[in-house]
Length: 200
Length: 163
Image (cartoon, rainbow over all chains, first blue to last red; front, side, top):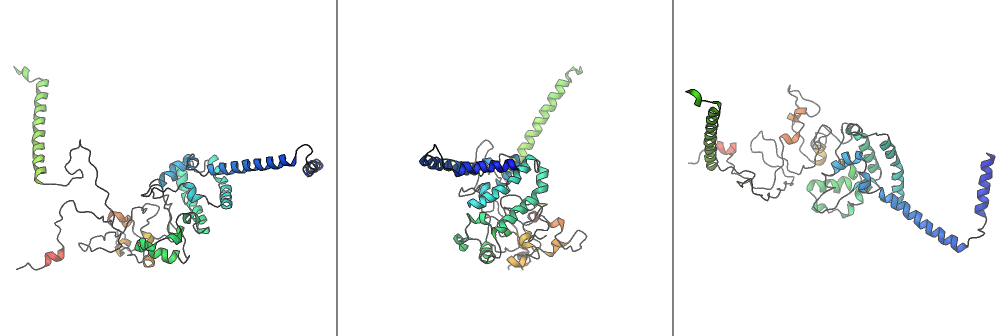
């Protein structure tokens, strides 16, 4: 204990005293440049984890969810716009993104210990994993949907009658959010028994 | 004396007979094909030729109920259902057509017959034998029929013959 305290005291003495040999200009410029390098490097590395190639570098993602995505409109469509994994599963705002990335460290744990390393394990966990995403999108009012599908830009007259009815009613009033109705649009649905809004 | 009836000779005879039979059969079927013009998917174009496939017909999405051609006809689906998931996990048609959802979206609730099990007893939920909607209910496309339809509505059949 005494040693640690002494160490802290020594460190503080070094930090609190002015530099003896280095000029202020050198310290300021070096600090600035290394700050830029560190910050840029950090963000570049984080952006790398947002690429499709990174996501499907695990077979868990490539064999299950990525395969299912490929038959949906978010992968291939008439206008050629594609939503990749991170467009829907990672928030765009920086602080939210950091929070989500920290949560995702659990997925690294899952990868190491093979939580869903077979198709059967994945199928058994599908409901739980889907529920996490439904809860997340419900809580942030379907933010990732709205990054592209903006309510204010929707032209109800160009929607089908049924779609216009739902969007100008329940969605407009805020009673419902995108994910309440649009579940399973990019991946197959799990066993939906007991999910609110599902009937048989 | 009977040396000519060797195995080789018999096989030859059998082969010739088979050839004749097949020629006869193909001749008959060719004659039939010429009589009845069936619109095939290839439209009578040879297998060796590459054909540009017709454009995929658009599914009607007007949300207008169509008339049934006969009383027992399963009603056709008046909207796009291409991405609906119907499997052991979920039946997405029932998101709207279930009894307790239909009024919310003004959809047609599934018929009461769909709640009957095979002992003709009513169930609370849909009977498993009626679970897969698309076995009977299909969408319609905006396309021309490939062959003439000679179906006559029963109402027309019952009309008194014109004098």
